[in-house]
Length: 324
Image (cartoon, rainbow, N blue to C red; front, side, top):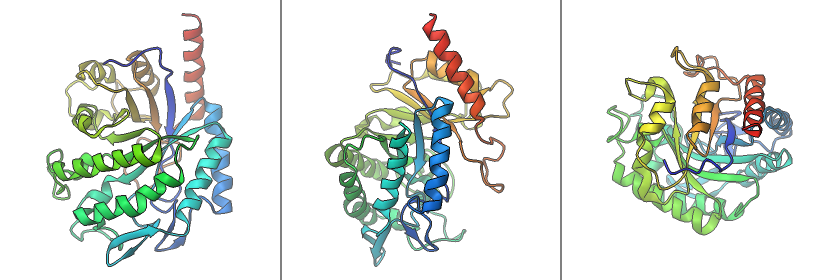
């Protein structure tokens, strides 16, 4: 990989949400967003602890599965709701106060999947299934969002989507993955162009696997992003160092947007994974996750970050590099 080892390693954490898909804007259950005083207090405390742990970057989901943040007419997005910008501004302000940078992931793969009515839905569930819906969302919601926070000092990047491959039939042979790669690629490229024109910050995409990251080379990303979980990589050898070494040459830097805090694989440890990323010259890595997972969530086994572990790694790495 062509990454420059002299580029600072951006250690990050995933603070994916307080309330999934309800942190920004007003949803079906009212306003539960970041601008609410009680939420600002909690996030301010957490951001201070994140800063003190040695991390500099926070990855956070914005629209999630699309249940909040904008108004629609006849199923077509028309404009941001009254709380969207207030909530985003509140989060960016909290990050700036702690010297942190935010990677805001716009869309979760759950919003891109077709669930066929097999789960409790919401009014916007199928909005991105049509080209007209995707175009209206980009034009009437995303572009105003990018304009409002153009070149904001607390923005690390806008992320087009979190793990879209789980919704795309060419990557994932499951019933819910009905979107065509060509259709999503057109949408992703148009979002990337909108970020460059109206946002003036980097744009990325959160690929679900290391091996899939090169698939997005045609959409003008500023850096690639991939997630690494030994159980989902689909390789006989799960070592992240070997996976990184096996990647084809990339024309842009690579950032590991998700690394598990722990994993059942006997060969995995967070400290070793971070070392492997740093030694490979990647742009940085963000650990999943800072906030404690819900008891019913699929990521319970991964758990959450131990701040002391992260701080010890950051301090040891700085010491080692200072003495090199």
